[in-house]
Amino acid sequence: MLLLVLGLSACGGVSQIPEDSFYRLDVASPAAAETRFLGDASVTVQAVAAVPLYRDRALLYSEAAMPERLRRYHYHYWVDRPPALLQRGFADYLRAAGAAGRVVTADQSMDVDYRVRLVLERFEHQRDTRGGRVLVGWRLEVTELRSGRLLREDRLQAEADVRGEDFSAVTGAYARAVSELYGRSLDALR
Image 1 (spheres, rainbow, N blue to C red):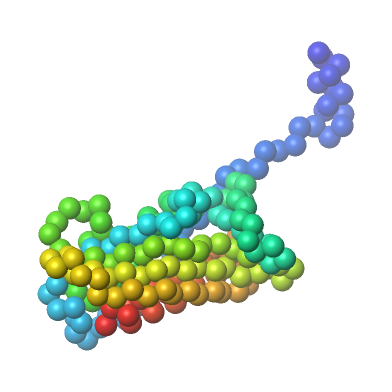
Image 2: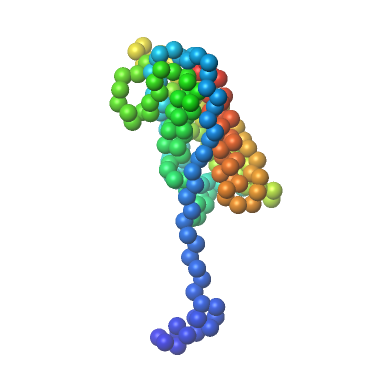
């Protein structure tokens, strides 16, 4: 046994195991609106994943040559599941914009006037030789809860180029794409 250990250490030793890395999705706040365009109404924000794979915390990627095949990055994770990140992020975005009298997330139980639902349909890094791009897409649904009437349904997509070689460049591209979609979703609510 001692000879085996000495033999392994002579061959360069044991390679270091990579550490897990966790990433936040930081999106800048919008400028506050001059008036609440939803008045004193209360709004709940809900985000769900259309595809079960988007419920996983691992960052996902595809290759430009084979975009239909998704794979997980090893050792690279979001701090929370993407739907939870988007739910909290969009609620914060609506609050910062002053869109309504009260904005809550779906896990907060209270009587509200409207439900804004983000159905996550795409959330991945498409790699190529230049770093690639991230693709984010969701279906925005706005429902008046008292009547149960669907007021609006839009499919929104955004992409952002990855500007660099490391994962901070990838997560920065996600932040830019999500920021664009938050802004477009806010405009749709107006």
